[in-house]
Image 1 (tube, rainbow, N blue to C red):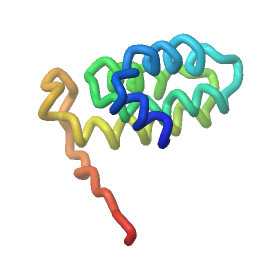
Image 2: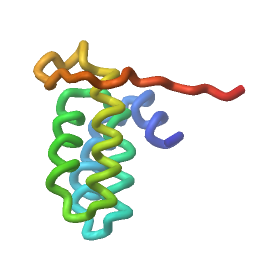
Image 3: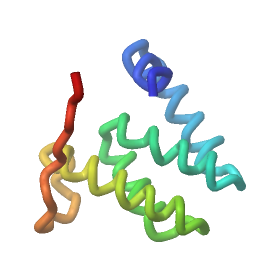
Image 4: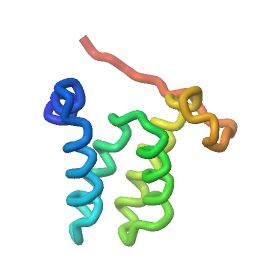
Length: 100
């Protein structure tokens, strides 16, 4: 995730988006697609959330669908104020636990 944060902070968001959407998520390997799913929430955009929503029901791998479901719920709960078109529900708020 360090490389993801560095890319986003250093202005490489477009290049990272292309890597995730055109390479990782298009891979035949569920492991590679899960890597893409892990990176998508860091974008914090409606487009990324919509892509996670699609993956949670349409990916061929149950493993990827389950991971996309978790990522979607986590980022959706956090980003609802930025993406008002997202469906609202009785979801729990995102809780981050930081260990010192």
